Image (cartoon, rainbow, N blue to C red; front, side, top):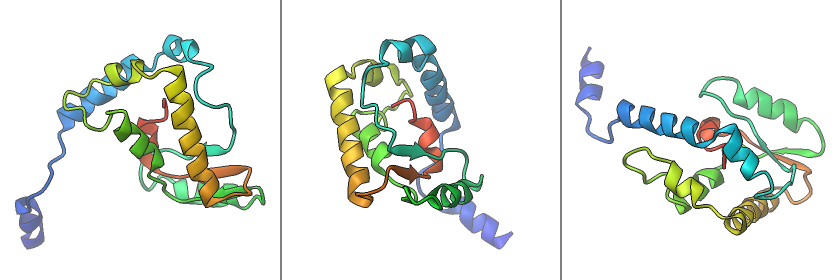
Length: 145
């Protein structure tokens, strides 16, 4: 129990389950089928990004390796770009867990710009690949972007 007590006493950022639940609820309320249908033409229609999502230790590495065994697919590991996009539009700094304001304020032009930035980021990592796999498990939280 010595290690348990030391870990419990360790200071640092604490996980706020209530905030996270509000954030997830807001995500569900924001990314409705109608919301997504209204924005169907936003972004970029590229098929290059492949997101392998899930919970940690759920097989994302194996899935990435299987995909990357194809000659046109590059396994890029866990990329941070989607999280940085979320930070840029203010999603990761929300204290109340309300996604609706920053998400609904994304214009078609901004979505195109963000998509192009993401695709450029992927092309830097694998210029000749037709598909680039990002296996960051927690991208499921941001996949609506």
